Image (cartoon, rainbow, N blue to C red; front, side, top):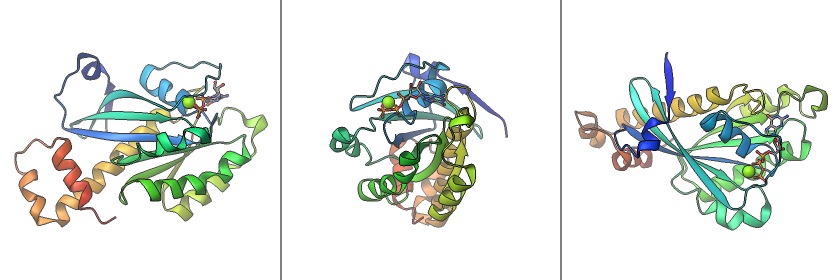
Length: 218
Ligand code: GTP
Ligand code: MG
């Protein structure tokens, strides 16, 4: 499967896309959420830590399976004091990147709490990928890959170890999440005959896609 990433559409405000996905990056403060998004959207990294205040977003357009998918990626603050603001953005999110830091046991132990936040504040059918970031810091590793893998398995989600710093598995994580969301969408279109009209020659935009999501029982 070939893929190509471009943000030209976002810069020009181009509305010519097949799908629009709202994604959120969540997890404890300092796990690397902002760095992960900057690596993906701007291919940049800084070792300075500027903790996110509230919430921010970037737009990126990807091509997957001949479809142009516009991603609206929300970068949330991990600090507890912003929880009321950030959880307000969970609604309508189609995918979550739930991140911990492989050098920080607490951030790994918090994963279950973040899952509870997702269950409480988002759609039932939102797709989740578990990410153990900072895998370049092997010397300071506190969470072995198997623990991440097992936790992901028990949560029935996919798992990547990544490095925003060394650009490991960043693009792969986003593309996998997009693929999972696309697969769920076509599953719900296949399963619900009332949505068939949307499949025939109609360009799917945000509205019908959300209908598809709402009808997904996954
Ligand atoms: P909040 O905004 O407070 O929720 O934190 P955050 O999750 O957005 O963390 P941020 O991206 O600001 O990164 C925190 C620190 O970790 C910064 O000093 C980054 O440079 C560093 N960092 C992020 N990703 C990596 C990585 O993959 N490897 C290494 N070595 N450092 C990283
Ligand atoms: Mg941040």
